[in-house]
Amino acid sequence: MNLFSGGAKQPASAPSPGIDEARARVDELRRSTRLRRRATGMLAAGSAPTAARQVTGN
Image (cartoon, rainbow, N blue to C red; front, top):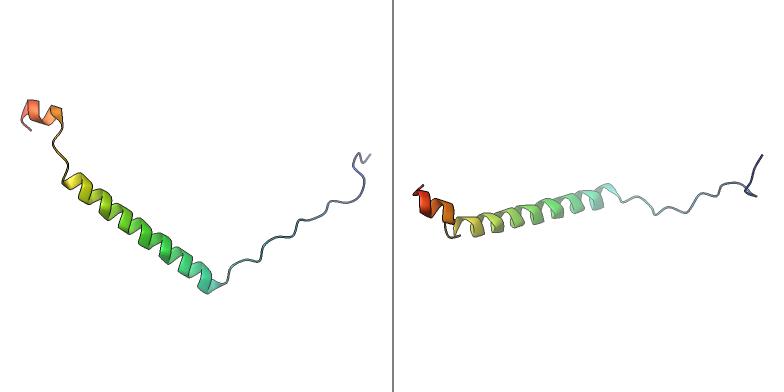
């Protein structure tokens, strides 16, 4: 017994990106991730020592 009238309609999907577009997206994501990691490393390298390190002398 079908409680819903009519058949299931498929929603119109967006066209899949081309190979070049997908490759450009991946490259951009990698570049931004690299920049973010570099910035995080620079901040961590210049940070002040923690209280535990000062107390224990490590």
